[in-house]
Image (tube, rainbow, N blue to C red; front, side, top):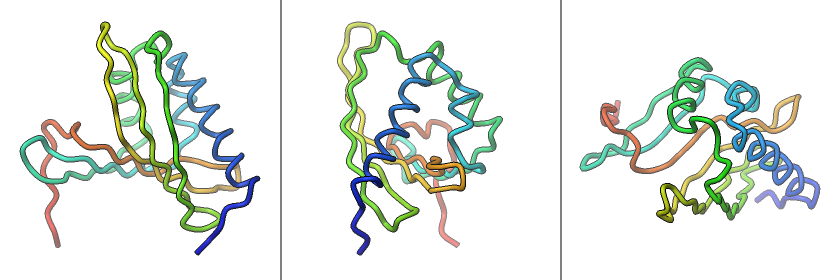
Length: 141
């Protein structure tokens, strides 16, 4: 089992600090620059089963424009992240986040798979329940 070094942990924290700063300003193109495409997504279909999909860079940008609008500034976003290193180059980061939207406090629980590239960390897979509205449920085989 891989035991991350202090530098490994610091590098993931720094990556998320960059991601958060870009998200705060709604810098969607720059956020896409922190990813590897095609990007894997896993969620579930409300009242159904799991759903999976892959996004191109263009699909990611369009979805994030819809989800983030002008950015996360003003939402009081707070995130607690727990990295789980699979190896020196693969880390699943579990996040518990809270934010305020229209005066109402909301919580989220999700995970990202980050992969170490020649340019540093990049996110490659996003996992979060409950946002697969209209997606086709996953099927085996």
